[in-house]
Length: 563
Image: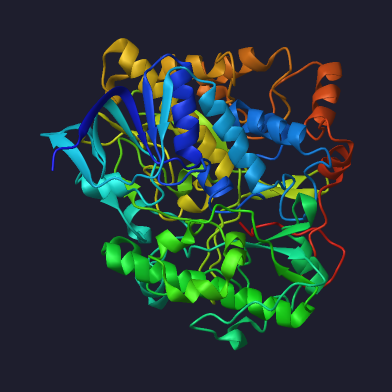
């Protein structure tokens, strides 16, 4: 069957966290951009997957780029503030997050958005990606960006990629296993989670049992925390409760390889994952009482078409709109890129608080985005210790920061393609830190800028000057983005841009403590500003740090690795 042929300069496939940022940045830089998404909401992890309590990049110095603008927009639209739960400083209604992204996309004259489509075929000639075929049309593009949740274009286009664990012998990562074992075989990748929202409702109807309902597996879920702390960890504005709980909760990874085996196998896994969360919610209601129930009307009512009008959905009725549109995927197919970031590139320098800046083989600093989350891995029922990458900040713990290398977005062999989601070229171990929402927004912004610059320069991504890309990101008129983690330098500081440029040119001078030299008065101002916000409640919280309920019920602060 002949389908319509569309042409564009930049094609972004996937409207998730990275894809939304990439499309916005590409269009803002002047490239004719087409964004094709599966769902009618944009934002991915932050919205359609229901994780509206994001992790990482919480320090003010890291609230830059599209991530920083998103936080400002959330604050403007949530008069009650964002500091409601203890898992994140930034707890928001996912409907508002989706509306912000949609508003931004509509404002861009260079950006067109088509929803309701998934990629079926990648157009390729030799080592050049030429576009993508969807059910209703085919798009030919000069640069294509894979922003799918599971790196689907990598498989469709036969682009070399990885899936699953690497052993210690491959890159000498300190936390990688020596040999494959029961854990690596049971969970080839991190477990996804189908997030859902509860609300306080004294007249809440009973949550129906899922077709597979095994409540006994959840018995220890909040034994270390207590019911009140458990319910409040993901509290959102308006009394909503985000349920994304890893401790004998709704993480689900049984047979997770099915996600990439076939469409039918993926559907089978998704159904089981959904039932697992439904069963967990029913168990929660049985424990805490009928004063809590599903929060209907939050997400679009798309589950009937996701599960092909499955009869078991009818028992949920309209309350099925309390469930996210798809699971929160923590891991994807991962590109084999010009550079592969490993655990070694995200760990702090010896005796320091920050990772070394990424360098390419020519000795050029390749930093194009940053993150700081601890290395957090989810394998239900297993404890998997990793090398710590966190330090104390203002009475709480925060992750040690690192920068993302441009080479991790560029295929080793294929032209016409960039990646901008959890599918970047990282090891399985490093993905535990690079996968978080603010970091992926930054990766998307960098990929979108790179694509637009390639269009302007008539070059391939592998030939793009990384210094030109860095300069464009730092000086973007809408959302300038920090590339070098500098703990004492908030984005509005008068010396912000000079110090960012200095360390990109002189990465050998980047200090292991992560602070740039400032005068005494400027240093004092910046130290406070790093923990301040326009929200008075958040000012205090960022200075003191949210008190995470500790497993032993002591009063100490504990690292927060729930995401």
